[in-house]
Length: 222
Image (tube, rainbow, N blue to C red; front, side, top):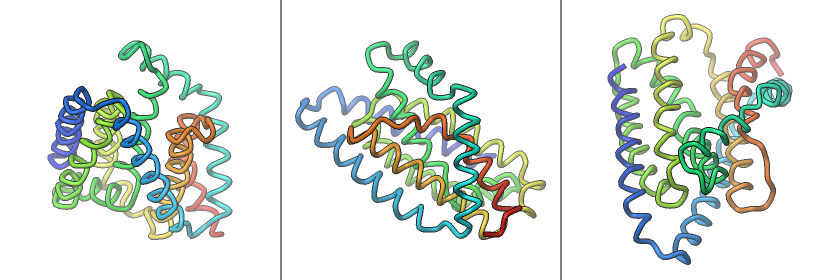
């Protein structure tokens, strides 16, 4: 798990630098950075969503995950955490947390890299850590403290994959990996709509889709 630990530390470091830079950014420039991050998130989400190979399994998994997340009130609970940490803007905290987490932790590089890390080869995750650290500087400068705390989610998610590496590896087909990436892209588009203030979407409630989509993708081959 060396790679995962260094990845989480890198995100925390990059976010800390971004938060320091944010203090000196004029309000007008901050809004432009926020818009740029939002548009980048749209583009990244579209690219990722194009990888879907089993659309029926993906849409059913997205629906099932959204219903489960709504029942668990994930978005509401994340907002409560934000209110404790940063009282003045719980919405921005949640957006920063989720946008950073989805950017860092959804995709073949994350999943395969975490599994290989658990099996003793951290090379993929170490390469990813360099990229994540750089991105976290820009994200934190635009979205604030939520990006810093995304390092905790990253550690939990990638750490779980690394610990379960020997069990998970045989079940992750190429199609399943692509569908996980695809649903991650859909969630990123939802987050981008929030960032750009187009529409308020409770993306936090959709997070269980990252589990339900691969489960259904392994069963439903369409």
